[in-house]
Amino acid sequence: MDPNLRPVIAGFIPLLDCAVPVVASELGFAEEEGIALKLVRETSWANIRDRISVGHFDVAHMLAPMPIAATLNLTSLAVPMKAPMLLGLGGNAITVSTDLWQQMTDTGADLKGDPVSTGKALASLVFSRYSNGNQPLRFGVVHPFSGHAYELRYWLAAAGVDPDNHVEIAVLAPQVMADALRAKQIDGYCVGEPWNTAAVSAGTGRIVTYKQAIWPDSPEKVLGVTQTWAERNPETLSALLRAFSAAADWCASPENAGHLSGILSRSDLLSCPLEICMPAITGQMRFGTGEPEFSVPGFLSFSGGTKAVPMPAHGRWFFEQMVRWRQALASEEASLQAEAVFSPQIYRTALGLDESWLEPAIKLFDA
Amino acid sequence: MNGGLSILVIDDNKIRASIIEEGLQDAGHDKVIVVHQMDGLVRQIADINPDVIVIDLENPNRDQLEHMFQVSRAVHRPIAMFVDSADSHSIEAAVDAGVSAYVVDGLRRERVKPILDMAISRFRAFSKLENDLEEARTELADRKTVDRAKGILMKSKGLSEQEAYDLLRRTAMNQSRKIIDVAQSLVIASGLLGD
Image (tube, rainbow over all chains, first blue to last red; front, side, top):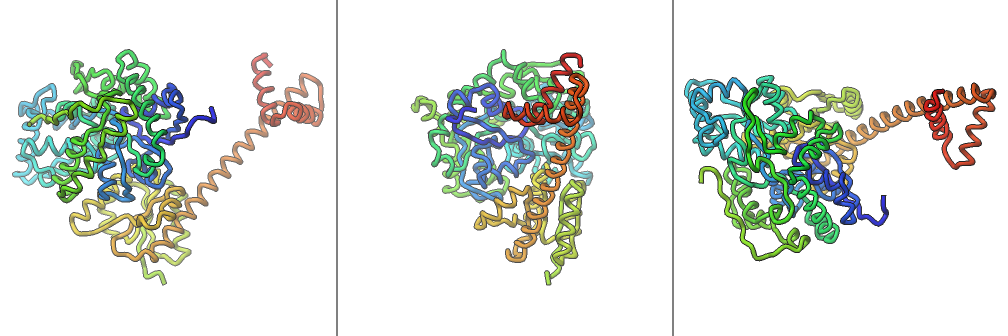
């Protein structure tokens, strides 16, 4: 490798939305910006957090709320962090067992995943179990500080279900969710793709709603970097952001969907059949076994340029969820810190973007 | 002397787990419990009520474990990660070795530090063991390749075993390559030429 390239080590978790760092490294986008990008596959979000905080990783593929939780010292080995770029929008879904889905359709759940309708159907089942004194339904999420946890909780709460008292929420690794569902250890889960499609194609699960329907075009994974590293390596970070932005545009291009799925399904990355990677990447989703495919625009989206800019409003929303679910205490100061984690400045400067445009309004399905 | 701390070791690598267990027992800790899988772990943790939990970083269920701690904090059984942020050297050594440790809140650091240090050194010893084994395997494979190359030379050029080996070595020296690389090229080339 060219000795003039600046080395950057990035940790990632094998999920479809690790596409941007993977493509930046594999297809030469990083090298073009003068960076020798080395990727390290990790097995847990806790490892990602620990290894970035001790300096094993310079940057990492992270759950959007993670850098906020670290900055606010809500998690182990916390260090102040920045989320200078969004690596993927959408991409998650909520899947339930086929048994539970059968009961939900009997209560009139929408077949295309409308969160109001499916939430209402689930709520009536939750309450009848509750009043009969039956075991509460059990749902899996991948991490307490994750979009998955907040989407599931938001969806349940919007239907009147108290996620802390009417159901149980457990944490499980993404790749074991479908197996846990089949083994009836859980009744449903919220996870990133391809681990919903995996249950659909195995015939054990049915997708009931999805992130894009709950909060359209919302951030899912971010590039996480410690504040110290960002301050010490501003030029390297800028170059990396330009490389990632170009890689994200490549990932977003429909004609690259097959190529991208082929790379991600490899045994050193997701190690899964190519067919289960395709639906989320092409936006052609199948929600249940034997059901027709249909198009869900923006189900999972990648893009460079302005769509990848982190926004203070995103940071504030995640912080509000942490307060809502008693992970953090409400404070104006903490809220401002959370906003600063999602500051758009580093990315805009790196890409030379216009500063004059407005933050998008955050609009959830029930607002 | 160690005041009967109970230590839970979570490691699905049984050999490594037993190496740690043994080390801790040698150091006078008699309450060491090893679990290899996460099924029903919540109940086990409640039953064992460990003072310290040691887990390997390769375990994909670390997030699950930490969530259990968070939940148990809500029911007033406070558990926190041991490695406190002041001791960054310990943290790095632990992460480097591939181990993480957690303790019940309130346990004094000096009582836990030797346990973490023991786990770190045992993890390192185990990975050295694995590397040595891997090296031994490679060495064996290398020797087989050199033997095959010698065999090819003996057959095609009518050389003795020693002459064949000398030829390999001379070629390697002349080309500034390793003997194994020359032997490998020869085996591949001979395969291409249909032996």
